[in-house]
Amino acid sequence: MAAHQRAGVTIVDPDTTWIDSDVTLATDVTLLPGVEQDALRAALRHRTVAGPDKVDAEFDGLHADLRTHFPLLHAACERVDLPDHALLLRWPGRAADRPVVLMAHQDVVPTNPRDNWTHPPYEAVVDDGFVWGRGTLDCKGSLVAICAAVETLIADGFVPTQDVW
Image (cartoon, rainbow, N blue to C red; front, top):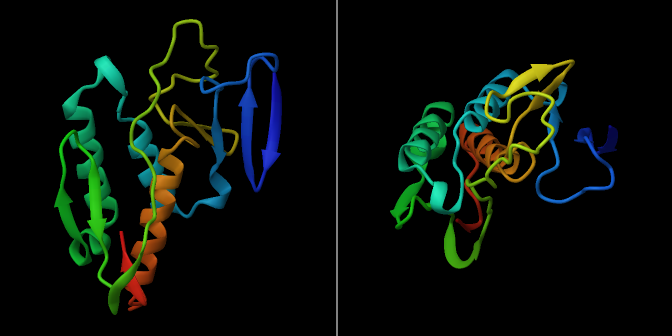
C-alpha cells in the first residue's frame, strides 16, 4: 500500500499499479475543525451513488445534513430547484453582472466488491487521524469545504462583490 501526501491530505492507494477513480481515499482530520469534520463525516455516510444505483433518499439526506451543518449558508442563499437532486444556491452579492461559481458534485462512483477498502466506504471511519470514505476527496470534501468557507464568511458579515453561485 502506498500513500501520497499533498497539501495535508493523504491519498492511500492499496495497489499502486491500479490508480483510477476507485482508489481508497482518506483526509487528515487534524486539518478540520470539529464542525467541518462532523459535516464531512455526515456527507460521506450518504450513498449518493451515480447512475442506475441512485437512491433519492440518500441525496435528500445529504441535503438535510448540509442544512443542519451550515444553517447560515442556507438562510442567506436562494435555492434554485433543479431536477435530479442538483443543488444550486445563489449567495447574493453587491452586484450580479459578473457572477462567481463555486462547484462540487454530490455523487460518488459505486463501490466494487474487488475494491480493497481499509474501512467500509460509507462509514466515515476516523482512524489514526484520517477520515476514510467514498467521496472524501472526489468530491464531498470539496463540497463541505465550500460550504464551510461560505458559512464562515456569512457569520463574519461578509458580502461578496458579485453574486456567488
